[in-house]
Image (cartoon, rainbow, N blue to C red; front, top):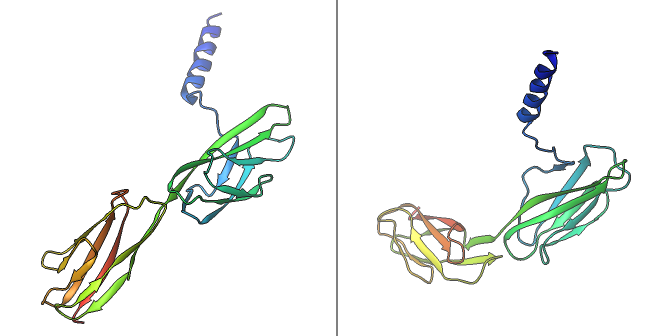
Amino acid sequence: MPRLPLLAALTAGILLGCGGATPPSFSVAPESRTVVVGDHLPMSASANVELAGDLEWEVEEPYGGGLRNSVGGHTVYFAPEAAGTYHVVLRATRADGHKLKQAVEIRVLPLFALDPPGAQVAPGGTVVFSTASRGLGRNAVKWSVDEPGGGEIDQDGRYQAPARPGTYHVTAVSGADPQVSARATIVVGG
């Protein structure tokens, strides 16, 4: 009789050691799901169990993008014009009739770039930079020159090169999202 409590303790230890977490029903590729606003992301999935029918895909959020091929093992996610985090939901029915559902997260990144992306200018010369942005609100851009003594830039993106030749960098930070920035390289007098 002493073996039953030992068996129960071992079984409980195994169950607790597993953490009780249910493994995902589907393996989804790619594992890293990021895409730029307005772009697309090919995706594929396979079931980790036997299915009774086809795998179905849908975008969870209204205005969260779209899909090409919403049935089967492959789809293409088309990102919306707004940056953010969205979810694609996979649904299927197991061979035993049990319904499966799994959501995967997709990060849609804004597009934020400088025009021109770089420049060559004479000492004391000027270059006017502008930003191209998609997926962000139209807020002011914060401009800066990275190197001390590397010139000056005003709030309108007009860069004034220093008298000293060298390589310098201008950074623009989005007013809508301070984590979004772009950088240009300027060669002065080269």
